[in-house]
Length: 101
Image 1 (cartoon, rainbow, N blue to C red):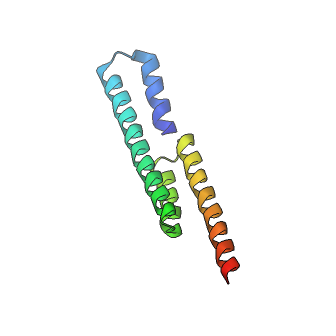
Image 2 (cartoon, rainbow, N blue to C red; image 1 turned 180 degrees about the vertical axis):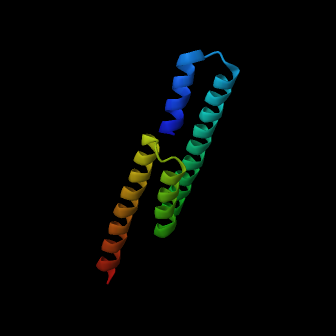
Image 3 (cartoon, rainbow, N blue to C red; image 1 turned 30 degrees about the horizontal axis):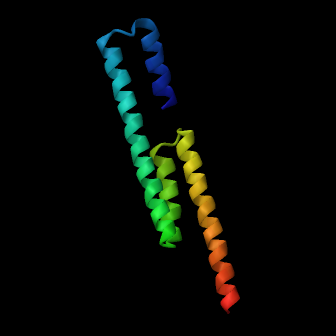
């Protein structure tokens, strides 16, 4: 994304009204929106997997979200929160198992 964004910004600085430039901006924005939507789906799937205590699926969903939109700080933060939630839930589950043993 950073290189594409830079190139589109340079083209916009030269001639923002050029149809090729506006089409390039639209394609870039559409691609970024699609990447964010896919990342959000992965985070939502990861949260559902976490609630089901399917830790491997939840962790994979966090990885998939970051791969889907690697430069989006909000996605990276959501993936970190998901991993933190997984770690906390695992720790609670482990404590509960040890308490009953």
